[in-house]
Image 1 (cartoon, rainbow, N blue to C red):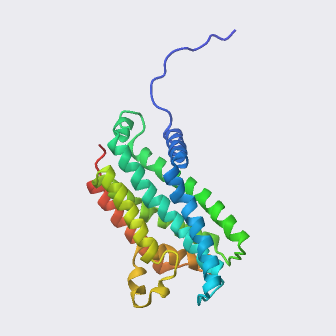
Image 2 (image 1 turned 60 degrees about the horizontal axis):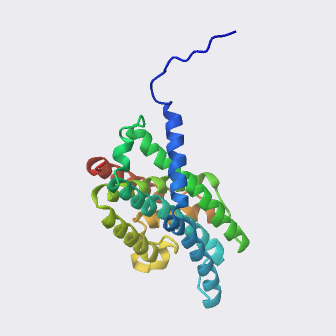
Image 3 (image 1 turned 45 degrees about the vertical axis):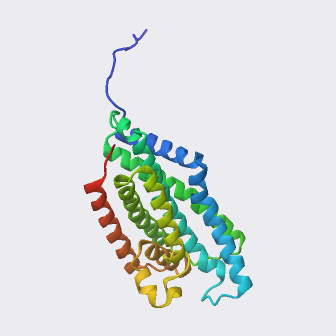
Length: 255
């Protein structure tokens, strides 16, 4: 009979296990929050259905069918809502209630905490893509897609908006973060060339292409409407990600 080894083995779990556990918790918390679920799924779906039905009724002059034109932009809107607005609000209140401070006493390092948040965002975005693409296909969406280009655009857009969201959450109080994140979301939804292409904004289109919202929208439209890589938009998103990460690293307060 083999004797049982009951000697203690102090120490944390492997980093990969800690990150996966943190990502699972971040995903569950976001999906259980009604306001976050509204931003992540309900509003993008309502915008998609409303834009497609509205374009057909009022006869908008679009270069493609309305559902083909609007679906990439709505996917970009979903990425923006999760990576920026939801992340900023959740992190801001985590700072206020001392959640991040208490996580600092756990074996999970700061790098693991950030990796867990990013992985949680990607899991939620995968769910958003399934739901929005399903609705778009039901409306008659027929994409001419390059999946690698769409994946690169989504990852770069997530990095850009997540770095900016953490910057806002790291320097403002929770209530101010809530107001600022929702205000920026509405402003970019209305005038950030995320759902409509930059060309629809006339002379202001050159400016909107330099916004993270306009760059992500244009990148996903190129990937899903013509199967092409948008190198210029990817460069803009990379620049925003670098700037946002640098600002976050210099200013973020963990408690």
